[in-house]
Image 1: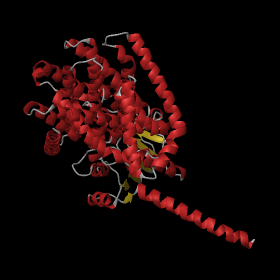
Image 2: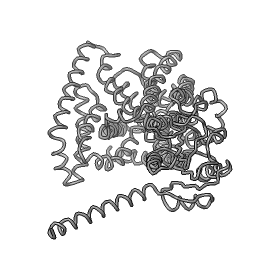
Image 3: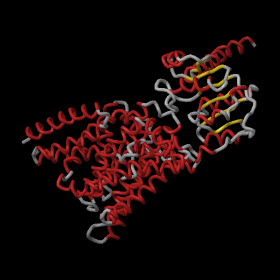
Image 4: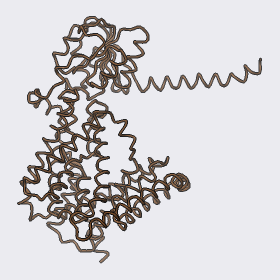
Length: 565
């Protein structure tokens, strides 16, 4: 029988690799491919009960390890540093999606508890998928990329809170027995776990991981063992395997070895999650597809259209252009692996049935598959949707938040992009006596520099009417500190189109542009119009090296000077 289990799992792994290869060619995440393999395996092959048990065990271990890695990198201080837009957009999107989704579920005939579970599951977006897609498009450094990453982190924190809540107050819902007694026991267990966690972090975590880190392989094995054991303990005391794995990650998240553990376990996590997605696909009851099909269509349209619209409205209310809100909003047009884990927790607690899990799985397949193309072709979608977004493009009517209100200030340098490099460059040039105008699409950055007394202007360089407001004819320099992917005016490097646009609007001065490497610099120079290329990373490294060598020289000469005196 052991040979049969080995053979069946071996065929499943090979099939997952083959379907995953096809999915990759279609630009689909492996999540979709693995669920499809699970559905196909369940529909066309009869696996043994022992194989199903082994897959279930590996799936549970994968989920525990996933939550362990989430806890490992969980930093509650991030909430204070995310910024108002990430916090407001993240919490606002979660609140609106859950509220509206709940009433949609009731309207579609679901009971109130299932509607609540489905609505909460629809609020989670896949950080892993979004970060990969934005990285491939080189848009993580753009304004919409930074905002999207910020509210995805907020969502991850909400996931943790939702699971903790589910493990505590959820135990008495939908089950037989004395709910108050069960709830009191779970709350007592939670308090006990938190107390032990604090003691472990304070007195044991650092010396123990330091001892284990002498043998890196041992540290990794111990981390896996600790994640599995904590998950088992969490299950025994009624908190659930997921919360146990999360607590295990938090317990060593403050140690200096967390990044090494996280890097070593990432591949194992992905391998084990394969079995979770296989089990989800296998559990999908194909006979219920008829009754769940239209529900899945409605919920999918809500996620694909409603979620981005909610983000656009929140960001427009905060003063951002519709374009920024649209591009950031597309990142929430799908549900995540945590949505399936959340529903699986509800199934294990008896709160929802398998048809609810199947419904969310169908929504996941549709939204993940389509959102990949939506994000990949986001600029083209925005160009098509631009006329429809005019009613919510409140930022287009905003005037510059600046120290000069006449619209045509006298300036020597115009800096496009007030990020870390552009903002510091504005300050340094202003200190040396240059009259500098900063331009950015981020209203938060504009307000920040305006409060400091700098001349700044809020504007979107992709809007033609904005160019007439800029004093280009009077400026001597234009500095483009705009990351690749922040704008799209041409099909090559987007900033080449910006250079052309500047030259055609009566600018006769010099143009400086930032680049990350020589290859990027050559590509920009080929288009012409660039007088100076700046390398923020290289320049910073050169400055740092100069400071180190200067200080080293001073320290070496100090003993000689002391001896001579």
